[in-house]
Image: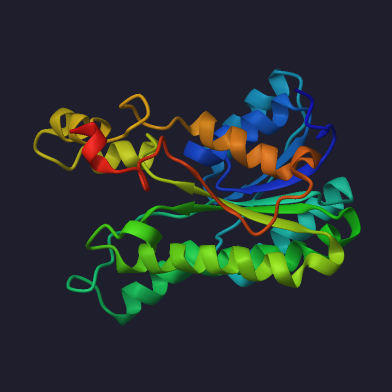
Length: 261
């Protein structure tokens, strides 16, 4: 299926690892130009080289996303390099375990900056170009905003904010025909997820306990499955979809767990 994304310039924050990497790869396969923004220089350079070797175009900028000035400069680099912005995928973040009992004000605010504030900043700085292109925004979110997890107040609050901003921006940007949607992730085996699983005394057993409860196929969602939906939402083929929170999770969040017993 041709998503009509050829030569479209799409910002992907955290686009060199996990879900962001998969988004960058799928965009490139569709002929789009992913522009990766993040702080992991070796990883970003390696991904850019991989995309170029496969015949695609790619751009990148190094930025600490908790710094507003670096966010602004990175968006400026997109425009100076390619002259346009057609879409934004807000993806970067980390489930940092800042809880109510084990956290404090400083940690909580830092978590919001790592996981939510830069979503706002990137959208605001990209907005003038998105108005010109009538582009689209996709926010990557987490089931923690619906189910809770325990011990991760900062991340859960940030994801609740991502959901709210998705709906708010969908309304605010209607006059410019800019669509805004979110993809909600539950159990997806990213490098960060693998690291978390590794903290348990019996990681393989813990992983099986989780996958046994995922209704569709009793398996983890792949990063490519998340990316496919995100890229579809960026495309003209989803031209009348906005303000939606779309769960790509094998039914994990909302289907009755009794069916997996």
